[in-house]
Image (cartoon, rainbow, N blue to C red; front, side, top):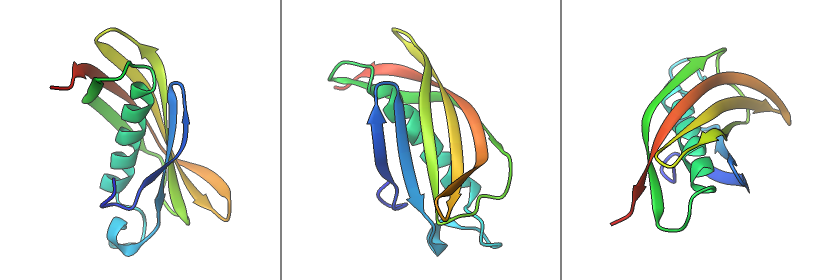
Length: 122
């Protein structure tokens, strides 16, 4: 996330927001945010949202995720929101939403769902 220039902007139990500023390194040939960058911040938002519900020492890995790109991702920045839908002992399911924010106005550009597995750090 540091390489992309993304940062966490909000943390609450079961919900995390990540912002990704627009810059040439995260856009594609038409100037839109690249799908890979859009997907990466969505994946991280869900992972961190899951960690807010687990005890210290636990970690997560993404098992599966699906992203629907709804419209070209444009704006001053992207805001990815990961929200835990169901937290289990082993698997957790999250809703993923990504908004393109232009002049303070968000527009939904991607939505998805993610499954994560809980692991213990070595």
